Image (cartoon, rainbow, N blue to C red; front, side, top):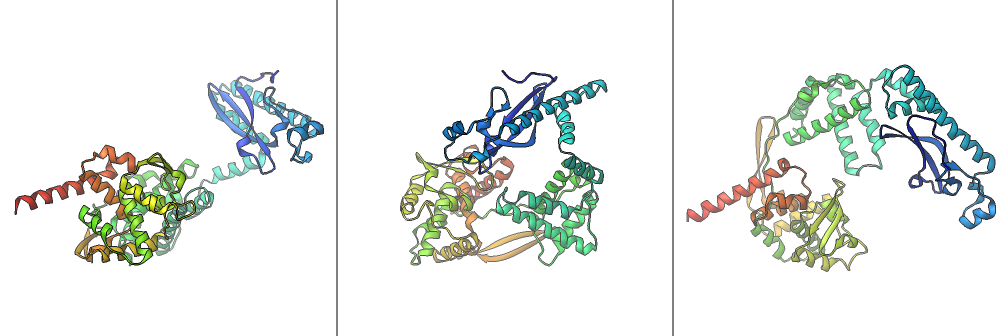
Length: 443
C-alpha cells in the first residue's frame, strides 16, 4: 500500500542510487508534479537502498540477520535503526503536509501556481539558511564582470574540459588588463555597447595587436558570461548584444594532395618525426581533431569505424576508416598500452610536424594575411612554418570536397554543426578548382 494522496499535485520520493556515496548511502529526492510538469528537490536525507521500500515510498527497518544476508560486506552501523526509520517517515509526511499548506495558500490567493512555485516555497521552509542567502543575492543582484567569471571558473573546474577553463582565464585576464587601463572595475550592468566597443579597440591596439578572429572570439566568450549572469538574476545591460565585430575571412591553410603525398613519402630518420608524421596523416585521413587522435583507444575502433565522444563538443562521432587509416592503426595499436598512437603535447607536435614538412620540401614562400581592425598585415613565411596539427583536419575537409564528397556528407564525419562554419572550406575548394582550370587551359 502506497502513501495516501493529500495534495493537488503528485508527490513522489525517489532514492537516487546514481548519486550514492562511497558507503552506499543514497540521497532522497522529492519530486512534485503539477499539470504533468515535475520539479525536484533534494530533501537533505540519505539512507541505504536496503532501508527503502519503493512500493510504499517509506523507509523500513532491516534486522541485523537480514542485513547480513542482503549486504554481507557492509557494516550494520550504516543501516537505519528503528527510531531513525520512524523519524524519517515522519519527516516525509511533514513535507507532504507543507506542500498541501502551500497549495492551499496559493489557491486562497487565487495564484495560478506551478510545480516550481511550490518547490521554491518548500525549499524556504526546509532550508531557511539557503533561502536567506538566495534572498540576499537577489536583493543585491550586483557583481563585477571579473568576479562573475571567476565564480563560473570555480564552479566549472573538473566539470568542463581543461581547455575551456584556460579560455575562461584568458578572457578574464584580458578584461582585467582593459579595466586596469580604465582604472576601474565594471559591474555586469555597466558592461554595455560602449564597453564592448572600447574593449575591442583595446585588444586591437595593444602591443600584441590581436587579430580580428581572436577579438571576435573573446567578445563572444564575454557575451556568454553576461548571458549567464542575466539568467542567474544579476543586473545586465542588454545593449552589448547590438555590438558587432567584423571578422575578415582568413585563408584556410590546407595541404594539396601533392603536398600530402610528399609528407607521406618522405624518408625520415628520427623516430619522433616518423611518429608525428603518421599521426598527422591519420588525422588527414579521418578529420579527427588533435585532442581526439591523442585520446584514441583500441576500444574506440569498432567494425571499421571510430566511435569516439569528441573532446571539444562532447558528441559521439562515427568516423569510417579508409584502408590508409587502418594501416596506421595496425602499425601502432600493438606498440602501446591502450592508446593507439604515441602523441606528444600539442605544442611539441606542432614543432615537430613543421620540421617534417620542411624535410618533405614544403619550403615555398607564401603569404600569411592577418587583419587587425581594418589593417591588412602580410607576412612572408615558408609553407612548412604554417603547418600545425589543425592543418590535418582542414586538409581532410578540403581534399574530401575536392575528391567529390558533398558538404552534407563531410559534415557528419567532422562534427561541424552549421554550414556557416563549414562554408569557408567550400570556398577554398572552388578557388583551387578555378586555379586548376585556368592552369590547364592556359598551357
